[in-house]
Image (tube, rainbow, N blue to C red; front, side, top):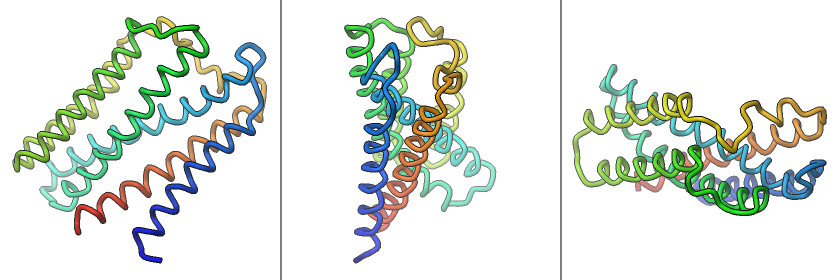
Length: 201
């Protein structure tokens, strides 16, 4: 098998492992089987936040060191961030429908997630169109920092203010959610390496 095939197989296996872990996870007393989607959603949220943070860090390191390698890794990281953010955003809509009985389009966290996705898409398209590394790196830094600043300021109208999974009395739920997060994180890392390999070719 080629390196790309091995990476693709690793991504597929990691995603499949996350889905199987969610399927085998215990149902929640109030949400029932729908809670399994919440476990997946939670894993996607945290991995997406880590990815967008990495984009910002790579941008900052490039501005400080001027090392082209850092800038080159930012592009595939940004592409994978877009993919994960889109899946995370889609899972938000499905989770809303199942747990709240409808999609609350005006919910602040949903609006924030959608806005961030649009900005990420715009920055990614700019990076493909214009060769201005320091400007693009500055935009990456701004994106990585602004996500956390906005999250801290946007109220959790429909979302719980505390982490229900961390506060759960079920060790199985905590373990399953942690495993889902780690499987998605592995898929994200492998996706970045694969995307970098494809860009180089």
